[in-house]
Image (cartoon, rainbow, N blue to C red; front, side):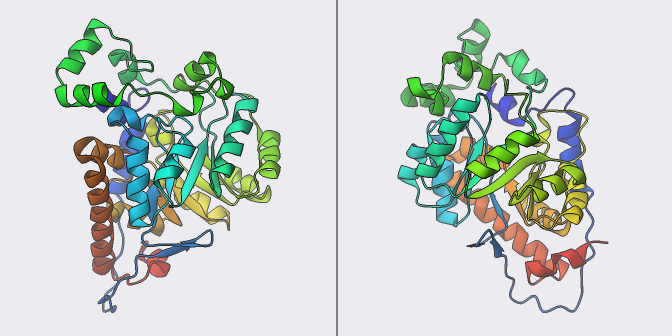
Length: 351
């Protein structure tokens, strides 16, 4: 059920497939007789210098994959010098993550209840988060059929089917028994919300009334960098920019919300052409060469999700660090073969 939670999408999972297919169909035009003896994979974004143009995307329930999952991901990101995006639905709190990482931590916000959102914003600020990501593509939960079939949810329901599933995966079960069952960490305290709020978050039952005027109030309240995640239309991106949003993240939630959504890579090109603020993207990235394709389509940087959770499941901290290094090598190789010594020239690779 954990594999299905990571890998699954909404409905028939057509959007999930479109995301990956768009990268498989991405065609770049290599430039020849370019000096690529040295390649520069670094980028400058929001006043910081990253060694590679990708970061770890916000993902809920990483602790269900491996105990302490958020802490492991944050530590690997810090060692690699890239941002780690912590989800509202994390299994470790922003304070716990800050205690193990001095790196750049971005906080992703779901608005379940307005008062709870205000508390989370304050906690993120107090923990030293300079960037807030507001996710806007989950007014209601997508039809995630794999989770419905497997019975996945928090708290775990110990049905005969789930107990059999656990028995067939003893290493995962032993880690769970040792580390304890995962919880929505930001909701542990009494002040942080009721059991109803936790259940609402698990069902992705957000405040569906949150609209543009509410975004304007959030912009006034949050003084740091504010990114809006879940944008797929150029007109929405332009409106965000006019409101003073610092950047948008083109995303269809990894194909986990509306199955009829366009591939994120496809949407990135039109969104990036419509605004002057930085455009990041996620959904469908499976390699370092995919990151190069995302940048060629106009993205300033990419966020990597599912591959990080698979690495976390397979080999823990070492697995995540190895995957980040693998993505960097793949990116470097693709740049050399495409005749792109510096990422500032990446737009010249588009046919």
